[in-house]
Every structure is written in structure tokens, then in C-alpha cells.
Length: 122
Image (cartoon, rainbow, N blue to C red; front, top):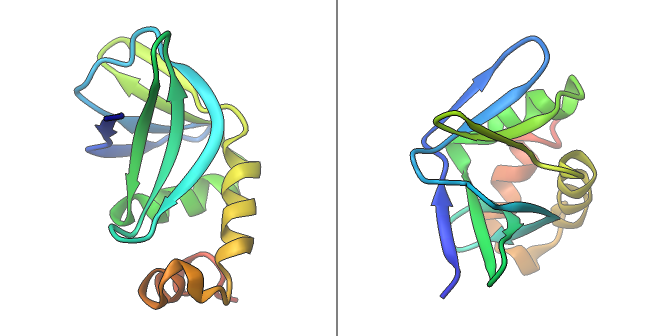
């Protein structure tokens, strides 16, 4: 089973978005890919270590922060204690996923409605 890291808090500064967790992120390498967890209305950023993938779970309550980071082109970092790792290719991946979700019922009507309501509203 893949390891899941839950993000408990997000902090926006003028120059970065920090996604904070209590779990160790030591030796994780950005996988540069985002997946969708339709059942739990979450995005998953893939991280890699020597053995397997680790899922960084970005639940719906974090989405407003993600939207701001995209709009302001802020780097997104995962942070645990003194460790910080920039999530490489985050903006491109999230924008690609959002464009795929728009009007696509394969992701489930609830997820599509929530994504369109927050990220794709005019």
C-alpha cells in the first residue's frame, strides 16, 4: 500500500504556499505528477522515495490556497518541521487536471461541480 501524507495546514506568504504536515518528508523526491481522488474530493501529488510512491493528499479544504497559488504563480512547497520540498511542476499538472475535469462526468458529478465552482468560475 502506498504511503499517504495528509496536509493539515496551508500557509500563504507573499512568495510561497507552504503545505504543512507532521509526517516526515525526508528523502522524498517530487514525482511531478498530480492524480485525482474522486471518491474523497482530493488531489494527490506524487512523491517518490527509494522504494515506492508517497501520496501527498490535498483535500478540498486546501483548494482555495491552491487556487491562489496558481493565480499568483507562487511556488508550492510541502513542509514538515525543518524540512521543505518544492513540488516541482505543480502548476502545470494542476492546470492540466483542472482542464480535464471541466465537464467530465468520469470524475463524478460531485467532484466536477466542486472543481468548476471554485477553480473554473468566472
